[in-house]
Length: 163
Image 1 (cartoon, rainbow, N blue to C red):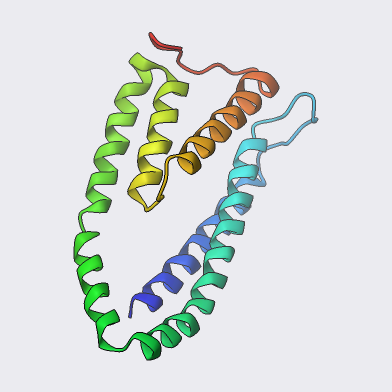
Image 2 (cartoon, rainbow, N blue to C red; image 1 turned 180 degrees about the horizontal axis):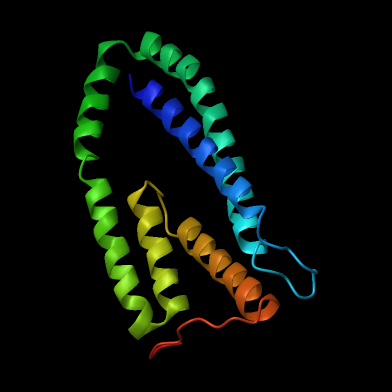
């Protein structure tokens, strides 16, 4: 049953991304050196569609792996899955709380500092096992945002008191 929900959510995200891209057509892209208002929504839409398609492919591949694991581990696997599912039910609410704190922090602490912390905390919340992956992801996202907005688009973020 969970697999059907994952496939349905992937399909909804694909439709949302395609709709986003279709809506973006009315905005000009302009030149590479002087990008127009349609460039960033185009990038977001393309990334959304790519990630949703990737997730859909993973969802279709997943039942085969789960069936093999179920046959291999038997009833013990079912018991641990239900425990893990119950433990993870509060994560979406906790993630919403973290996102609200992140939005409030941007003004006072600055975009890059709050974004750095948000990515690390949310990565750990969704299951990252160590600290090196979330820290590397956070640094990469901040560098991407810096070069995209500050350098290329010449837009500035809230600096806050720390950065």
